Image (cartoon, rainbow, N blue to C red; front, side, top):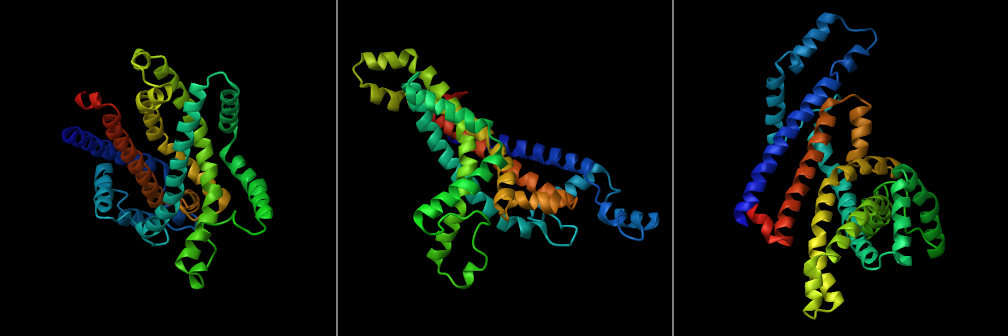
Length: 329
């Protein structure tokens, strides 16, 4: 098991390096660091632009620029924004904001996908299976921003009216300035109220697709020979499904979840815009793409690539836990 993990870890590092090169190449070809200078009035002279390009190292060969950027990343330096603010200082706090939404959404989506997928497979072509299938395809068809807007408009207001107090919030990741007058438990309670709707919005859209994969994998397992053999040996149906069937059916879901991390990051960008969260997604749109800031976009893409590679590494380890035969491959 140790050598299996080491091999996967080395492979993950190589993939991350390749991702960093690809990310830098795409951003270098798409962004113009001199655009902010060209837009000034009166327009700067060509000599001035040449001096700025020389100072930014834009005249250096591509791999020299890439190595300069990568060596900075390895020391925690993501460069500066066009306003001179270190990108790393901005990203640290925003990773925590986006991270708590993505992690909770992932956990909720996985639990719902397993439960709904297993129920749909065990009770195939029954009323519950048709109901879950309809719900899954309905959620898959809904655009992220529209579903989030529906939750803001109807769910939040309805629950707050039912409770008689505001327990669900639709704007921000916490009440502004709450640290000035509230205690630790009150702050976390407030953050939880702000967290519910964005998490549910992100989780349900992921759960819809994942539950279909879990149902399909569970149906394949239920029809396998070893499941019939376990039943023939006298095991109860419930124990056969839970102990022998579910463990093998989780392998395809593990793959889908690991590959879906990038989708979660993309969904978080839209979700943060709808709920006005100051996380990584909003930082990308407002400080990176809108301001044509290459260092912000590079930092966001590299961090996203890191988490995609990390979760794929975790998935590889889970494969070996769920099926020890994978370690020998």
